[in-house]
Amino acid sequence: MRAARLSVVTAAATAAALTALTACTAKGGAEKGQAIRVTAADSRCDTSTTAVPAGRVTLEIANKGSRATEVEIVLPDDRIVSEKENIGPGTTYTLTAEVKAGSYEIACRPGMKGHGIRQKLDVTGSGRAARRDPRLDRAVAGYRAYAQEQADATVPLAETFAKAIRAGDLEAAKKAYAPSRLGWERTEPVAESFGDIDPKTDTRADGLEQGQKWTGWHRLEKSLWQDGRIGGEEKALGDRLVADLKDWQRRVGKAAITPTSMANGAKELLDEVATGKVTGEEDRYAHTDLVDFKGNVEGAQKAYELLRPVAAGNDAALAAELDKQFGALNTLLDRYRAEKDSYDFVSYDKVTKEQRKELSDAVNALAEPLSKLAAAVAK
Image 1 (cartoon, rainbow, N blue to C red):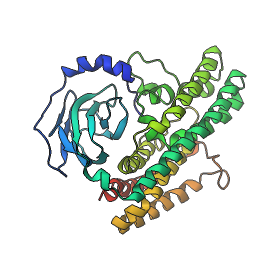
Image 2 (image 1 turned 45 degrees about the horizontal axis):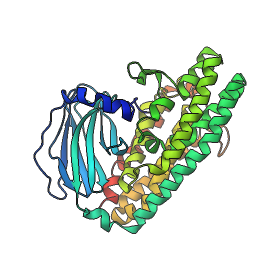
Image 3 (image 1 turned 60 degrees about the horizontal axis):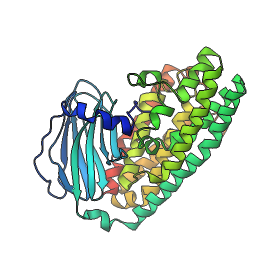
Image 4 (image 1 turned 135 degrees about the vertical axis):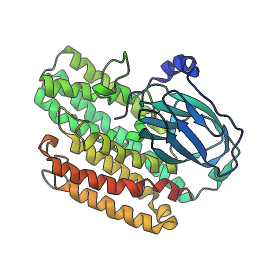
C-alpha cells in the first residue's frame, strides 16, 4: 500500500496549479555517468540537470522538507520507471535506475500524495542500455512473466472474495480476504507503477486524498471486521474491486520494468513491510499482516533470485549476504505459520512487542544489503 496518487487525467488537470510551486534548476546536460542531484522540499523539486545520456542514471536525493517525500522517474503517461518512497525529512537516498532515450519527468511528492512537483528530464542516445548483459534481459522477461502470473492468479481469488460478500456470508468473506491479496503484495511495485490503480484498491483510510472516495480491500476489511456487516454498499465495493483488479491484470504487460527497477522494487517491498506490516497498520482490522508480510518478502526474493547471477558476478559478498538474510527472515516468519508451507499465519494482534521488534530487526538486516542490489546489477 502506498499513499494515494491522482489519476493521470486528474494529474494533467492539476499540473498548471502545481507549476506555481515549482522551483526549477536547469543547468544543461549531465556528462555520461554523472549523478543527478535532486533536492526535494515542501514546495519545490530542484534537479541539477535536465538531460542525461541513456543507460544508468543515479539520483542523489536530499529531502529538505518537513514531511516524508517520494521521488520518482516517470514516463509521459505517468508510468513509474523507478522510485523511492518514504524519504524522511533531513535524510538522503541514492536511487540507481536505467532509462532509455525519451522524455521523462522527475517527480517529488511531498507527503507522498498528489501529482507531485515535477522537472523535465530528456534522455538521449542509446547509452549502455544497448550493451546490457543478456542475462539481465532474461531476468526482466522472467519477472514480467511472474508479475503477470500473480495478476492472473489474483483475479479469481478476488472473485471468490466478492462472491462471498454478495452472498452476505461474513465468515466466508473474512476467510477469502487475505488470500485475495497475496499476488498483489508479491508484485506491489509493478501494480503501483500504474498510479491510478493502487488508490482504488489498496488505500487505507489515512492515505486518502482530499475528496477521494474510499474503495478497495481495506474499506471492505473495515466493514467485515470492525463493523461486522455486509450491505449493499459493500456488495458494490466487492464488484468494483474485481473490476479494478481486472484492469490491473490487463495492464501488467505494459509496465516499465528494468533490472534496476526490479532491484529497487525489491527494496520497496521491504520498505512496505517496515512501514506497514511490522507496525500492524496495514491490516489493522483483520490482523492478517503476516500474510501480506510474507507476500512482500516472496516478491522481493523473486526479483533478487532472477537478478542474482549478475549480482553475484559483480559483487559476490553482497549476494552471499542477501542469501543469508533472506534465509534468516524466512526462517523467522515460519515460526508464525499455523502449519508448514501454509499461508495461515498467527493473527498479528497476538504478536508481542518483543516479537515485532525481532521481525523488524530481521527486515532491517535484509533491507540494508538489498538497497545495494540496483548498483550491483548496473555495474
